[in-house]
Amino acid sequence: MLDTAPNRPALPPEIARRRTFAIISHPDAGKTTLTEKFLLYGGAIQMAGQVRAKGEARRTRSDFMQMEKDRGISVSASAMSFDFKGFRFNLVDTPGHSDFSEDTYRTLTAVDAAVMVIDGAKGVESQTQKLFEVCRLRDLPILTFCNKMDRESRDTFEIIDEIQENLAIDVTPASWPIGVGRDFMGCYDLLRDRLELMDRADRNKVAESIEINGLDDPKLAEHVPAHLLEQLREEVEMARELLPALDPQSVLEGHMTPIWFGSAINSFGVKELMDGIGTYGPEPQPQQASPRQILPEETKVSGFVFKVQANMDPKHRDRVAFVRLASGHFKRGMKLLHVRSKKPMAVSNPVLFLASDRELAEEAWAGDIIGIPNHGQLRIGDTLTEGEQLRVTGIPSFAPELLQTVRAADPMKAKHLEKALMQFAEEGAAKVFKPSIGSGFIVGVVGALQFEVLASRIEMEYGLPVRFEPSQFTSARWVNGDKQAIDKFVTANKQHIAHDHDGDIVYLTRLQWDIDRIERDYPDLKLTATKEMM
Ligand code: GDP
Image (cartoon, rainbow, N blue to C red):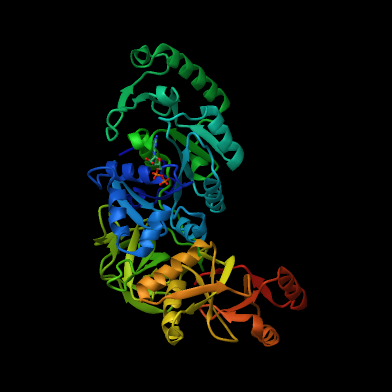
């Protein structure tokens, strides 16, 4: 096992060896390819390419998935676990498309770190920037992988500068590329004084690693042509002068990101990145909760739902709640308290997402992600404990930015439609509002594409063709305040009032002016654009 830099010495070894993280990137930067190589080195798959192949087999199952494939986006997040050099990695996949930012945000509440993948020719792109901002809200440690170095890429200093400037984070090179584009031959490992040489002939071959005694070692000249060697020495000297040295504490605090250069498709630089995640990535971290924080080393088990995925298998109307364990040592069959309903819940068939397939989880530790099949009891934001009334906090629900009314093509099927909509609302796929006047439902989403996804899922999973139509409203706000003030407000604004799937009161409007006016006229009320899930 590598030396770790434990920032929580009290952790039992089983917990200390866990690294739970997500990959953030702009579409096309290489997230899927990198994931495949992680799994390859994690021993989870025999051959790279299986993630994609398997993904495609799954996708052909339905029109919805077909749509996902056509558009080249991945709509749902999943989790994968694999082992590497004594570490247990839990990789939580984030949906890549910007229309699914709420889902992505919640996914990032379940990880302790993020790997940021950028394309060496394109640098920091828009989606990377957005996702980075979300990570920053939680001071998540970030490790950076600059991919596609086998192609024409930007100057190394320029890439590092751009990250420092755009993301306002210190960048420290963990490796340094040798040669550009066609001439790219590998990297100098600055952390361990090694030469890593890429093999262009065999994409799945692990790079040749040559131990070097510093940049003046004559051995270097045996492997690196003179002009590239000269350039390497100059650049590294400059980098050491101009760029900050690696400070593990600063990495853990989210102020500094180490950057590795590589080529995922050529399996190059990936192992060094994985070593980096193990060495500099954080162990499972404390979880904010009310009325007290939860520490991973606590012996009692606790966890929270950050995602619900319905109908993973359309034949069985099952739902899987993705639970991040916040503390303790979980064993299959355990009875846990479902804090929201105050009911016990026997977790008899939890699923571990071992990369090769779903598998029954016999045990799991703080930091792990388990899937709990259920019939709808578990919702996003729910906490499970061994009895204590704890509630994990900080998992938000955002006000939708787009609203449309939805109707079943067959008016006799309105009840059916309600059931389907409630399920999607609980899954977190959309907000559903029932207006207090009139019939029908208003559906709110963050990105327009979600309407299409919903329509095709309702048709596929419930056999119910539906129509989305423009709504007279464009904004939704949750109404908070004491009961008397709310009652008065509701009576006076009936045409604008609806209830969300939890029964909470929502104010719908098309004018920002209305919202400002209400805040002025009803000083006892608060209209909010987020609501904490509970
Ligand atoms: P994602 O959208 O971020 O998941 O990106 P993919 O992993 O699907 O990669 C996007 C494209 O870039 C694919 O055609 C990959 O084959 C290609 N690609 C990924 N890594 C590399 C790399 O290191 N070098 C080159 N030249 N192409 C790569």
